[in-house]
Length: 528
Image (cartoon, rainbow, N blue to C red; front, top):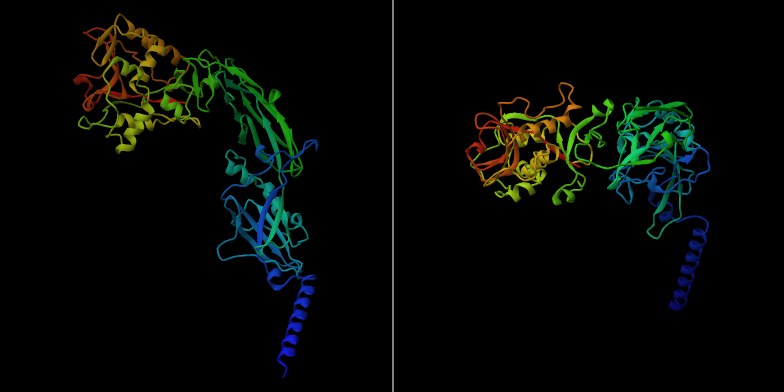
């Protein structure tokens, strides 16, 4: 046998086979190409303005969904005969990719007429679907009807808002990539309607980003505050719905404003509702004595608006904050709680040198402004309870809701109590009695200080919301501070009256300041 000819023949046969495979590949994919994994990608078409004059805006303004880590879609696969072969398969977004459940993958086969449909947000109980599988809107039509009929009226958080916003889409398979996968691309369309509510607002003259709408309340629904004073609310499409609520357009006025508008939008559209001109701001200059409300609003103490007064949780005693608190983002001021958190309790054990720095000078007293930090030093170091460091425990657990972005309640430092009696109580900045580690005022300052503080509280006192200061002459009142003189003694603000005279004290250096004595009052403060 001629080996040379044999080699030539084999070589020619190999070339022929290669050419045949190449010709086949030009008409249909090889097995590896046909059964390639499908890699899912999602894009949101966004809500469109009802007038159709506005293009869908950028992804970060709330008209288009930006998917975040942990978001989930439900995937349906329908074969060429209309049979659902994969139902409600959950894919989870990790911030970059949509991932199949472990051990699961959908593969592409171009010899079939397979269709792919998806919806968002995923529901663990598969939505009801139609037997008509020609399009996403056909397949999901029962789910769309059920979704609109069962929308939650509480959309106050991103999670609740996103859960109301049904989107569906049909998947399209892209070309084979270099890593032997194919993209399965979904362009999702919103099936509900959207109303955008723009509210007029106030802002601080020193911080235009601190915006608030005094006394805002919604009627039978809660929208999502998507940014500033703009709210979004998902509604059932092609159905008239009334959006209504109330707020106080004049923070010093005596009434509130009702607003109402009927909204009706088709699927995937949005309508804008501008209340009293929409997002227009009015400046407010923060002042000592202003009232701090449970939603972060700030109103002047001279207001006659009972609707707003009833939402007050504190009285501002400072319009600046410490360097440490500024680092937390609380740059505007401090407010004092309206009521005592607890009375006639101990400060804590007098045998422990806590992490709170000891102070002893007049300058130390006046500049000790970090009650929040010192309260949390105690809370993070020890197990606090009604019997162990109780003044801290009751201040931290003062049962009045606080606005988002604030510090929450804490026990004031002695410098913060000094600010209370100087700024609200209007006592002289220099004491008339000075000993080591203490300040004192005589000559009637005790009664005038209490009276001045109580004047700020008077408009809020309806019999249960306010504890006033020193209302029983001949008695004494003692307000606890975080600040310490030694491991045995803590500082206090002390309204003292009796046979020794009437004196307003800030002190910390004698046996009457023993931390174990049961005469301390815990009254909380808050930073914002």
